[in-house]
Amino acid sequence: MLARAAEAAGDVAAAEKAYKELMLKSPSMEVKYHYAHFLYQQGRDAESRSLLEASLVEGRRLPTHARKLNKEWLDRMSEALRGF
Image (cartoon, rainbow, N blue to C red; front, side):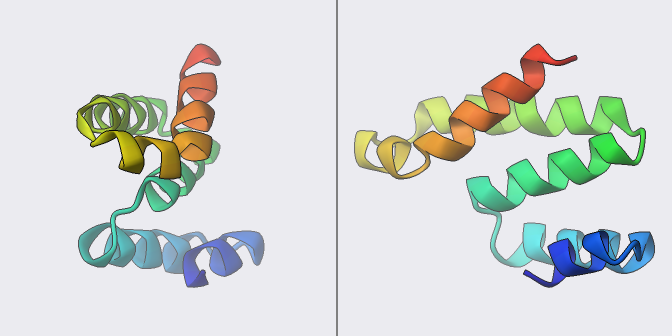
């Protein structure tokens, strides 16, 4: 994922841009988790928390098979929220 590569390289602006594009084109639970983590790392706690909370609400509304497919990311989101 381009966003994670830019983040690892320390290119915050490119990472932000790539995450925003991903959120528009392919807002999977995995992308949402990584973007929330990125926001947290940038000191944008309120945005990170809001994204995690909204994603978990969305996750609870998913059909059973989709919740199972996204279990890892939903669990990580729940754990991240406990850190706030």
